[in-house]
Image (cartoon, rainbow, N blue to C red; front, side):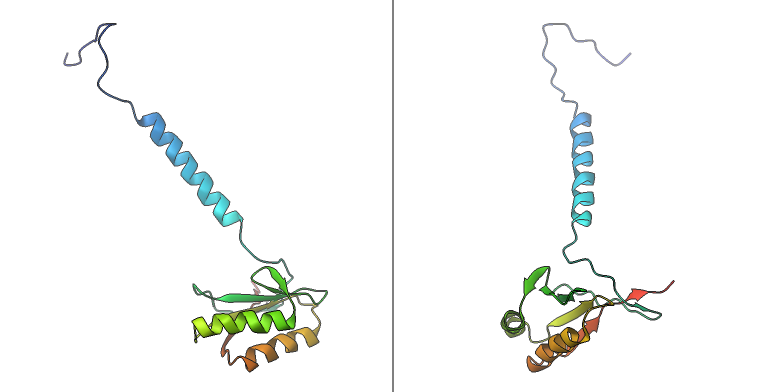
Length: 135
C-alpha cells in the first residue's frame, strides 16, 4: 500500500480543505439568494399588456406612482420639485438617461401626467412604461 500511517507524535503536513470549500459554497449560495431577494422598489399593481419588451439598462432610473398618488424615485419618496432636480442631476451626468415609469393601475392619471411633464421639461426622451405581461 502506498499510504503511510503517521505516528501519534508526527505532525500532518496536509490540510483538508474540503470543509472550508463546503462552507464557502454555502455562503456563496446564501449571498446570491439574499441579493436577488432584496430588489429595490415600491410594490404596485401594474397594468397588463400583451406586448412588453425588457427596458432594463444599467443606469435606468425608476419613477413609481402608487395607488394613493405618492411618487417615488428609485424607492425614495419625492415631490415634483425633488424629482425635477434629482433627475436633472442624473441627466447632466448621462445625457441619454433612460427612465421607466412604473405606475399602479389605479394611480391618479394627474400624477402620471405630472411625472411625464417633468420628464419632458428635462428633455428625457428614453421613457418606458412598466406593465405586466398577460400570459
